[in-house]
Image 1 (cartoon, one colour):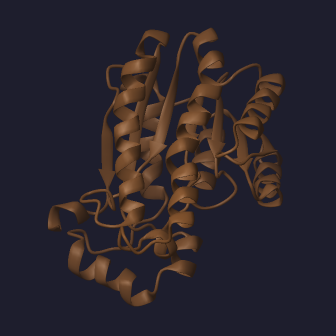
Image 2 (cartoon, rainbow, N blue to C red; image 1 turned 135 degrees about the vertical axis):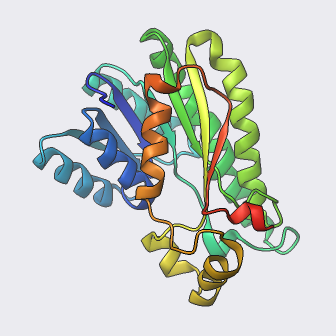
Length: 250
């Protein structure tokens, strides 16, 4: 699958899953825009991609702030001519927000929803005009197996992402925009290793997954590239679970 002439706008693109997606798309010819709160991290990834012969830029972006999103999208359009792919990856997650629904403080609830849910709405609305002008596009939202079932505050936010995926697919179909969600299981990212206790990670791997190995960002890349390609042109509104069989054990 090749993406020459395409531009991908990736929130949270400076590390983890977002970085893996950025490198994969750039490796297939796409220009990538790394939209990040941590601008130095995104700049480092962008420099590495450019040094390898790819096209990339980093932009400062808080997905919960409409003005900063619009400014970041405008920079991307000015630099690369438009946006064809939006990956809504930025999120607040892991142990901090994976708390019982009534125990997470309300200020954290509101901040999490602003980023994990409202951020998708803001970014999708900001990218829609450019996608429509270019004849269509693709939006990929990051959900989670934590939404199946949604028994934590974080899980509820990721259940909302699945709902947004269906709603946006219906709303944006007339513009030629397809919308998907990927629901990863526990992936071996630096943030997961830093924030989740080892015993909890071991429990998921040994007791809840059917495939007894640690998931990696590489396990997600194939699905991402498929969704962004013309091979998925007759699919929209779907959520693909990539969790080693984890939800089947719930």
